[in-house]
Length: 153
Image (cartoon, rainbow, N blue to C red; front, side, top):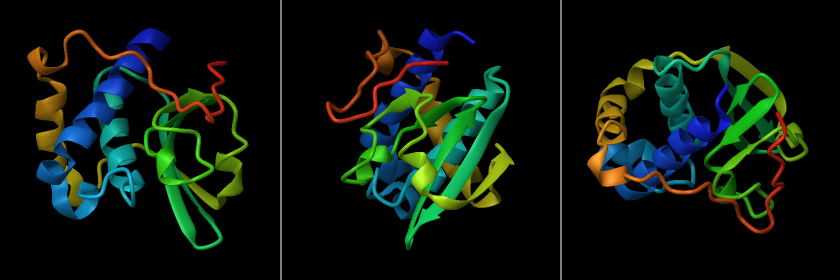
């Protein structure tokens, strides 16, 4: 896996969701990153799978009453909504340190398969992701200072 290419795609997705979340889906992404982890992870996972990434899994769990969702690619966690939590791993987390995510019990894991409710929003998301002019050159990875910054594979 080319980690640099993965970082570029994940950073690009984060920018798309921040800039166009309401347009993509006001219901599911209107308050991005808050309450948007399922939709964002589902769409990002579908995008990555469609663009040649293997072993991309959607993972969700609960910490008390707080739900959260992210992607796992083998031992690598990809989380673009962790900053919705005060103790989260930051705006974008790509790494193998699972301490934060292990707090979410009752985890469900599935292959990335776009939920029917996200089909129309995904088409809008994919159009923005495919737009080269708006996002050239790709932004550098963004990590919050307090984030677990592991980039281990």
